[in-house]
Amino acid sequence: MRGDPGKTKAPGLSIPSEQHNIEIARNRRVWDEKPLVREVYRRFYGEIASRLRRDLGGITVELGSGMGNIKEVIPECITTDLFSNPWIDRREDAYNLSFPAGALANLILCDVWHHLAYPGRALAEFARVLEPGGRLILFEPGMGLLGRLIYGCFHHEPLGLNRPLAWDAPAGFNPEAAPYFAAQASATRVFVKRERTDYDSAWRVVEIRRLAALSYAASGGFSRMRLYPACALPAMLALDRLLDRVPGLSATRLLVVLERLPAAA
Image (cartoon, rainbow, N blue to C red; front, side):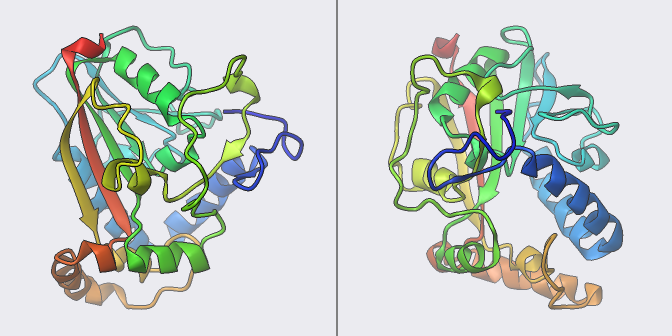
């Protein structure tokens, strides 16, 4: 997924690959300055932690760890990213993982799936490194009406709602030369709308949960102004639980849990 910044681009849905590391540096500054964002993210990580398979022998790994903050909630998690940084345990590419077959019990992707230009290729690699019963946990932008509005109007990455979904990488694909890709609606299109079902034979769907997560959106996230004080977080969380009942309107986040079937070996 690395590329030559500013030169290798896919039409419409890509930006220079170095942008990834630029965003990590910016987000680290925001993380330190906005305790409300930290608290909301810890709750997101808690949702992920509660869905881990802890009864298996393999390790837990996060791909695209960015700032590596997941260790605050899941300290045993091995953090990885495309770029070497002091807070990252090791470099990994989603299309070409260095882990042995069946070595992982859990594989976590938080805001990473929508950066996969060829998710079918990545899923095959994920199935290889997960042991039977191991879990792939995705936490992604959700495309309810509110999610489309927020991500479409206030986020620099494209939604990719109508672009044809690429799945398998073309012949001669080189992960080392792939550009930074983004299509925020990708997970919703695959797992909620089921525009692709190619994964059904290798994975059991454990859970697909669409979350309002207005508490995060209104916190301003990493790039916008905060819209409520930290003391109002309990009220915002209560509002989230209410809005979760109408995900088609309110969803801004999507939690997907898949379990590797033995036949995927």
